[in-house]
Image (tube, rainbow, N blue to C red):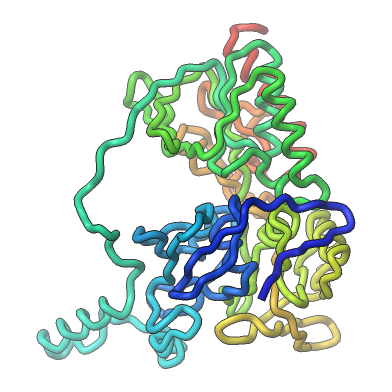
Length: 444
Ligand code: FES
C-alpha cells in the first residue's frame, strides 16, 4: 500500500532520497526526512504497538511528539517516539508489548476478557505464593519496552554549554516566530528555541499556511537578527542555579540559558473527543491529519470523517476534498456527535448521534477537532499563574495586554494563553516580543 500523494492542485511535495526501513521484520519504503511513523503509515502500517495493560492497538494520534501513542523500539532503544524520529536507511523498528506482532497480538485477549477493567492488585490474594506467581505473570504480559541493546549503565554526561541572551523565546510557532522577529528588531539579542525539527509549529499543519508561510516567517525572524534553534527542548526552569536558568536539551548537549526576559510561546496540545474506542488507530487529532496531508503529502485514509466545528476543521475539509479524498463532515453545526468507533484493530466505522437518531458511517480515518489544551506547564513551573478556563481549552497562562505573566521577567503569548489560532497568535507574539525586548534593554 502507498498512501503518499503524488499530485496536488496547489502543493509540490519535496521528498528526500528513497531508503528502506524495517518494522517487525518487514521492509518498507521511506524517504529521507520523513519521521519513521509517517513513513510506516504511508506504506500501509496501521498498528505500531500495544498499550501497557490491555494491549489495545496504538499508532498515531498527535504527530507532534506529545501523546505517546507512537512509542516503538528503534535501533535497540525502547520507547522512542516514531513521529519525532527521522527515518534512516536500514533503521530497525519494532512494536512493543505485543506477541507475536503489533497488528495481530494474542495478548490483546486481556482487553476482550476484561471489558470492565482488571485490577491485578486485588486478584488471587488468598495465597501469598499464588499471588506472587500471578504478579510475575502480569509483569511479563504488560509494561512498555525492554532494556536497550546493548544494555549497560548510563552513558557519558552530555556537553554543557552556557548561553546568555536578552530575550529567549520558547516555541517557534506563529506566536514564537512573531515574538522573535519583534524582539530582534529592537536590537535585543534574541534566541528562539523549538523542540520540533523545524520552525513553524501549527502553521505546518494548516492548509491555510503550510511550509512556505512557516519558512517565510522564520526568515523574517532571522533577517531581523533572531537566532532560531530547532530540536531544542526546554526541560525546566531551574531557579536554584546561578540565580535561575533554563535547561535546554539539544542534540549537541545541554544548554544553560540565561536571559533578561523569557517568552513562552509553547502553543497547545492536541486533545481527543470523548467517545467509545476513541483510541483506535485511525482516530487522529485534526492537526495530525493536517500534518500528514499538508506537510508530508500522505493520505490519512480512503474515507475521512472531519469532526468538530471551527475555521480549522473547515479548512482541513477543503484541503482533503482538494486531494480527492472522500469526506464525511460531522458536528459542523454542533448538532451531531460521534459516540463510538468500530473496527479491530483499526477503525472501520463510526456511530454518530444526531437529532434524527443514530447512524453508522463507514470510514477509516477520523480527524477530531477539539480545542487544543494550552501547553502551560513550563511557564507555570517558571512561576506564572494559570487559570482553568473551559473555553480556552484548559489551564491557560494569565497575561496582561502585552503578554506579561504574573511572574517577574516572564511573558507568554499565543495558544498557551488559550486557543487563538495562527493569526491572532502571531499578533499576540509580536506584542509580547516587543514588550519583552524593551524591558530587557531597559527602554520605556
Ligand atoms: S507522540 Fe507520536 S503520535 Fe503522538
